[in-house]
Image (cartoon, rainbow, N blue to C red; front, side):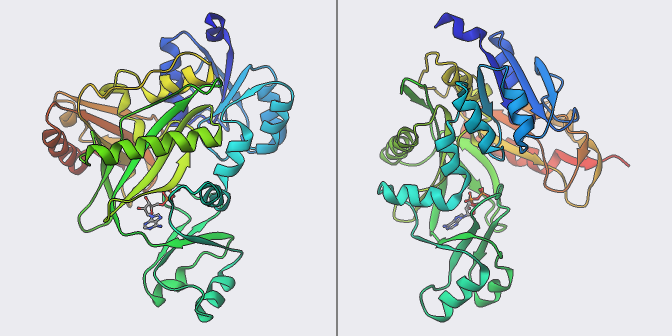
Length: 384
Ligand code: ADP
């Protein structure tokens, strides 16, 4: 077991999640190689080894993986056939390709939950926009609903909410899942970890706080304010999903808590997740170290939140494209308990994830106030 630390790890994808995995790996003296398109990506300066390559190309993934012991991902958009071939060669591929296949396709994901009687919103699968229109005409489908592209969607791209007939104009013309519009009280995420031997652990739930009018996620916070029994239910459900998917590594389980306090699984991600960034400063183990421990078959522990935390994403400002400038950074650094993570992306674009800030404070309300202030003052703009 102690030798596991010497395994050669390869990560497909060199974005911020890859970067933070390398940071955690460096602490344990791990050798972590990254493959990504070019050296402008965040993980380049910090990984042990770098390969220029396309994670969606079969040959590139095989060439990268064949001299590694363990291959993992930081984004789902990878070449699945290549990962299957690497698995057949005896490589340890985590998440396992069977789980990744289900997760990459929101249609298969929903069908998987339904098959196991996991609570999730009711849904129907459609092949095209025309099929959806016909279903409405035939009174088989009624407004409101949410349409989601089965593949390639992320960060709300590929999700279209239909609240009125007028919204039908924006229907996506692709294979999609159409699900009931849920009356959401709050959105919750629980990150769990699982080792090859089935041992599991979890992080305390994280809640998303929405802007009161703009319907945008303002920030994430932990501990959750939900009643204890709801949190327990969410943790148990998340663990069960990871177990049934036979995940190895992390699984972030996004859930809706309805106005009736029902918990519904929305979707999962088999890797470190936005809702676990705060674990670096706020927990006794970070999600990044937990993922590495899980894929190296090393002991897992249930994470404890040491201090309340709020996490604010730093997105590229609207109307700004060009060389990155973090405006308001000096001011942000003057407050204790404020931890900016700047991803090092040279070019900013509207809404691009450019960094995040974790705010820790013994008083969660104070942390939220600081979070609001940071959101209003720390901006990612283009240099003029
Ligand atoms: P993505 O993979 O792009 O993050 P999600 O499935 O998480 O897509 O959807 C993005 C957001 O859209 C969710 O966080 C939630 O706010 C809203 N949403 C998604 N599905 C539903 C639903 N069935 N009912 C109500 N809101 C939803």
